[in-house]
Amino acid sequence: MKKKIYILIIIFVLVISGIIFCLSNYTKPSEICDKSRLPVGYNCSNYKIATILESESCTINKDCEDKLPIEYALMSSCPYQAVCLNNKCTVVCPSYN
Image 1 (spheres, rainbow, N blue to C red):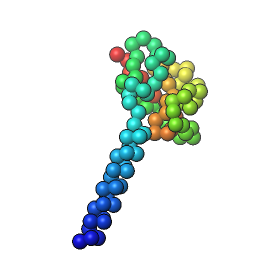
Image 2 (cartoon, rainbow, N blue to C red):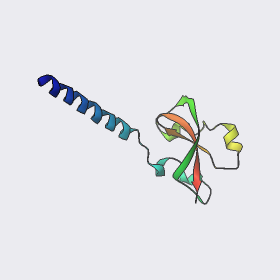
Image 3 (tube, one colour):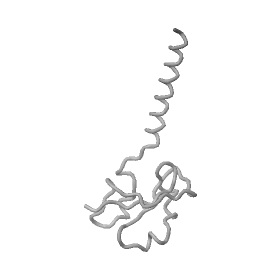
Image 4 (cartoon, helix red, strand yellow):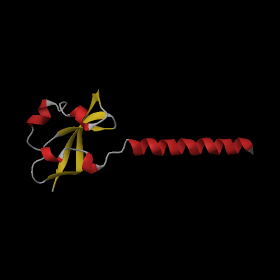
């Protein structure tokens, strides 16, 4: 009986730890990109991930500001931005209203 209780406690602790980890890495959609750098009509509430820059790790968006690949900077189809998602610099395309 004690063994089952210990196993349940361990499972509970692991589940709670997983939830805390996920919440600590969660970024609100409104915080994804820098609104001041977006053209009129675009917003950060929705976005599409264009690519993940696997070799570029980060902790905040500022770490990724100068990491936007030139091919995305030159595209006119979207105001691409490099942002920090899940500790990796990620190129995103904000949605158009």
